[in-house]
Each structure stands twice: as structure tokens, then as C-alpha cells.
Length: 480
Ligand SMILES: *Cc1c(COP(=O)(O)O)cnc(C)c1O
Image (cartoon, rainbow, N blue to C red; front, side, top):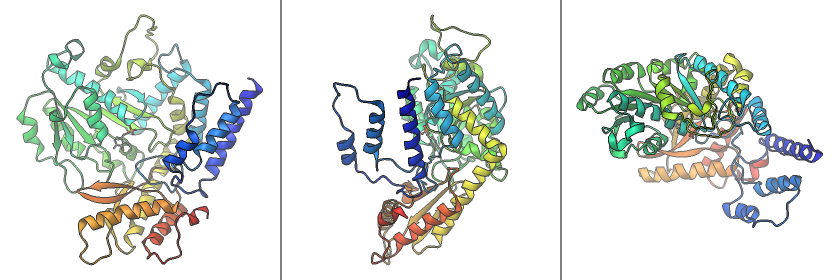
């Protein structure tokens, strides 16, 4: 390796250390506007090349203030996990090794690591050992892979080969999906040629769980090839559908059941939370994310399919120049992509770094922190708890102080509070609309979050709730 490559990699290490070491001091929110970032980053094609170390330094300087503190223990927005140290480092090596995890021939170690990771995950999640699996860019494409297998299988059961005849030559499908299902389900279905009118929303109860009683009639109503989509942890309240009741019912009517377990499948690792998933192992396909609660860097999702033949039929490709090997698992047979990143290395590292015990501890810790934040917020004046976490997700609403304030004033107050806590730099949350009302979401999915982070976040929320005359001033406090 040339000294130049050494120099730039060492520089990258230093910048990474500075970024991570600075997390406790820097604001969690971005401080640079899009306009500032464009002014700094926008360039025209340069005639001459620029020294690699210089390129890196320039990039770091220009991105300053434009990076969210996603890896911070006080980042509670959306559902964004941190990266475990070994996973982060393995991810760097993945780039250095630059393997193409498309076939065994292109990346032998990368493909064997994927084989191993798939087996480990099936054991850890308690899924059937004969399942096939695929590592994808995220849960979105894991849904795509699982639902493509579903589409193929339910149409095959109806006597139709969708690959030969396309959807135009197939009977119409119908999809029953929880009314709380994530937008990535609708998008995956759209990619698969399944339109909105083919999707029937299944009603959920006050806890966000699909109501079983209403379903029997719906299943009987039509003999169309059917796919049912259930939640193992929805984004607002981490609701788990009653799998033990729903899945056998769906199977009695010949439906394929796909489960969105983007982060919720990880509840399996915890002794006290595992019951939420009871019966989920009877489904036909499952999608989850390693870049959420397994804390590997972006991007990594995982699909599991009970019926390997349908999965392979939906994804596989034969091309003249591809060496087919009977003795190896070629990822190209199972994933929607062709050339692809060797994302198994980071996942392998994360699973080994934590082990069963570490995974369980991380899940339990995150759940306890989520509860502490929501309960702590609930004790503050003018805060209404909409959902006390049963897993790692909670919802609160901030009430406008005016007597007789309207719902839309409470909505506005809630959005203002999210913005003002985020502007304080002390913690970062995101908003949502839940059952028609604005709410602040609390999501804890990061190994880094500590009790001190929880207390610091609560103090920031309390300070934002105090009248303006108070001496807490957003941004100035961010360098504590
Ligand atoms: C994050 C999330 C998704 C989408 O996952 P990506 O990895 O962003 O593609 C789908 N469903 C749920 C419940 C999620 O939380």
C-alpha cells in the first residue's frame, strides 16, 4: 500500500474518532442549514485532481454542523440504531476489502459469512431452521423479497406462473394489511404491481393490534389469492399483532402471512419481551432490520422465507457468465440486487460482540430507558402520555396551556416542543400523527444510551417547558 493510502486512512480514523468523541459535547441536532451546506459542498467539476487527504479534510469541514448525532445516546427520533464498535470497524474493513457479495466466486468469505449470519439469526429469532434468507439494504427491500416470494407462491397455488404470464395473465391478488402497517409495505406492493385498491386495511384495536373477530368474514368473502401482512412492532407504539390467533386463521384460508418486524423481531432476544412474538414463527415470511436494533451501520435488512423454493424462484437469475455452484450459497439467488456490498461482515461482528447475553441486555436496557423517558415526561406539567412503552417506543403529547385549548392548539404545542427540544441540542426526537393527533415519539434503539442520557434528555424537555423568561437558552447549553 502506498504511504498516501495510509495517510488518508489514518486521517479518516482521526476524523471518525473526533466525531464520536465529540458526541457528548456537540448538539444532537444539525446546526447548519441546507443553504449553508450547499454553499460549502456545492462544487463544479475540478480540472485537476485534489490530494486525497485534502479531499477528506474539506469534506469533513464542509459537512460540519450538517451531521445529526444519530450515534448519540440522546438521539430518540424515528427508529435509528447506533453502530456497535466491532460492527463499525468491520464495516470499514468491508470497504477496504471491497468484495462483491453477488456470488461465492466473487467473494468467498463474504458469502460464507452471510451463510453463517443467516443461520445465527434464525436461531436467535427462533425461526424455522429450514427458512431461506437474504441480506438486503434494509427492511424496505426485505419486504420486497418476502412479498415477491408471497406473490409467486399464492399465484402458483392458483395455478398461475407469474414469471411466465406476468400479472396481466394472473388472477387479481388481494392483500390484507394492518391499518397500522408501515409505508414500506405499500411501496413494496407497488413495486410488485399490486395496487392500492387491492389492499384491504385490517382494523386495529386501541392497542394497535389487528382485531381478530372482524377478520373471519373478510377472509371468507373472497377466494382471491391472498397475502396477509402483520406487524411485529409498529413504529408508533410497537404494537404486536395476535399472531397465534391470526396466522392459523389465515393459513386455513390459504393466505400467505408476511410479518414486518423491522425492529420488533429483536424482542425475541429478551426474556421479558419475547412473549410479544408468540406464534410469529408460524408465518411464511418475515422482514427485519439489522441497522436498527442489531446496531450495525447502515445499510442492512434481512428477509426470511419459510418456503425456500418460492423465495429462490422469485429472486434467482441465470446468466451465461454466472458460475452456478451446487455446493455454495450465492446471494444473487435470494436478493433483489445484483452486485452488492458484503454486508454480512458487520452483522457477523455485531452478533459475536454481544452474544445472546449482550443482545438481551441491550434490548432490556433500551426498553427500560424508553419507559424512564416517557414516565419522566409524564410527570412534567402539561404533558399527556399517549402510549407508555410496552417495548421501546412511546408517545407523548404537549398540551397548550390556555384553558379550553383546542386539539389543534395541542397539536401545534406538540410540534413546537419537539422543535424546541431539538433546537436545545440536548436530545433529538421526532413527531408523528397518531390516531389523528400530533405526538412526540420516543424510540430507544441504541446500545450507547445510558441513564445519564435519559436524565439529560428529561432535563432538556423540562427546561423547554418552562416559561420563556427562564435562563435555559437553546444552543448555548449544547456545549456542556
Ligand atoms: C424502519 C421501518 C421500516 C423500513 O425499514 P428500512 O430499513 O428503513 O427500509 C419498515 N417497517 C417498520 C416497522 C420500520 O420501523
